[in-house]
Image 1 (tube, rainbow, N blue to C red):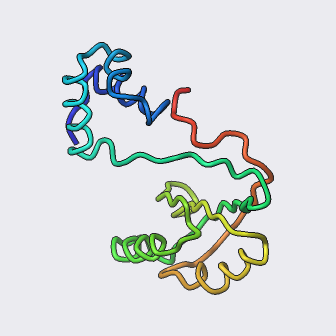
Image 2 (cartoon, rainbow, N blue to C red):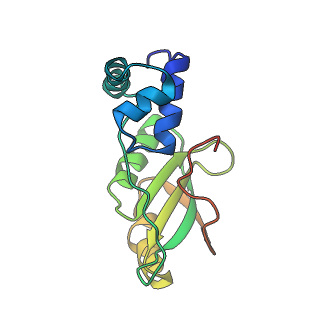
Length: 153
């Protein structure tokens, strides 16, 4: 990844707060002309610094999902085991986030399911069968306090 200067960092900070900001408003916010701002933005996208844009969706209501934070410990931490586990986790639609960790667990997964019975099915049929899994520890979220907030805000 390329080194980022102060202007790139400002562009990223503004976009993290409002990913739908117009280029003209973004340019004014970071102190560039619209054409220079767009050029920098496109370079950040091409280089992979900005990987994409997303919408944060409120989960309030009858379709509310149960959030489960699951710690996974593998039998081994070899590159092969890590790669196999990660590939399988990417194929699991209930896994919204997956982090390789330091500490006691090898991975932490954020899982969204309909209810406890749905999680039980996922645990039995999917998680316990993921490559190399030695231990699964899960915690159920009571409610969301902070979600989707850009870092530093």
